[in-house]
Length: 499
Image (cartoon, rainbow, N blue to C red):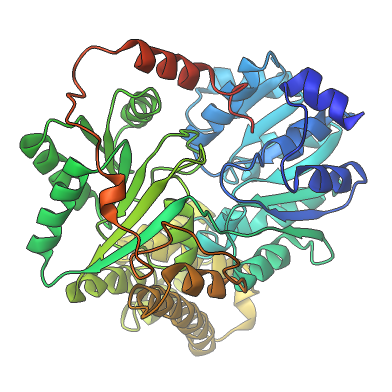
């Protein structure tokens, strides 16, 4: 039966590693945690069961662009009973989707939208067959500070009648897995853990003496190696700066992408990159999640991420077609200053905290919106304000004296800072590895390198020359017959990219 649906609905004759096992547990109505490598077809694990179960499949998705892409892929399969409910829609469009929930099979939605009383009320009137948390690592990565609504998903699920839960991710070490399971309250879930190793991606790390040298090396590298590719930066300013420099000094088609752009601009740039109209994206970590572009040949980290889980996620956007690709990280001693400052900015400082709490208590009780505004008026960043608001929402504030309340919050802050700084230390320790980089990376996930490969890492003899362009070409030249076929394949996807 499973193979027949796989063939009839999705056009495949056999499952990839892990898919059948996950699907069988989902169909048996078990809570499931699945860690499957990037490009392994995680979406099939909820799409196929959706056709075998009565009711609506609710998929919690982290990004608007990802939701739209996922929904479009299902539509391209011929399935019209799929919709995306997000803040990009106007009030009328949202109302139309909510009124036709009973006619839908798949609903993509953000964790924030699931905090809306009207949405919960409408969903509670439907039969929910499966509650999916896609990119579940976001619970641990973003939930505690940036997007605390991720930490409320267990309550949302309970209000919907506790349907079976499927948590999906490509990357989560033991600590992150524990956090996901704890926050979703599925500690007894059936777990399917597969290797994070992407053998077709060579790992290269280079320490440079100065930021100017890093700029030079980055531009020289993208000029010489095969594309398309992605370059990651800490900040919007750096993404824009290098994008302009690459555009001025090479003939490559390049654009920058970050959270400060209008949504329409972000969607346009993403569309251009997917359809081979851009060679390089210079971006912050706002770009890449769920991007279904098989032929990304390189990922460069101009700035390294704050933790290894993010690094694995980001380099995993290369080589989804299984062909040789390369991940290059450049770093210098001064790089730590910015991520450390960003970690500090995510929490109210010791001088600000007592003043914030005093003012809040003098006006208590406040709505969530008023509380957030008050914290930001007192100098908190939005991330710090959301962290503080969430922590206070978890306790009975009236049971604390102001000094006790301050001490409680300070303990929470120090605990999270300690964890974040340890993750940063782990990332830097890996960059400075004196040995096989792949082996050291796998060790972080409790895995071991099981085979020798020609293009493993720079320490093991992998040469960046193997990834150089065969010959100089002008990317702005008209498309050849081969490239239009590739473009058409990208537009249509391999059966809409479901696998």
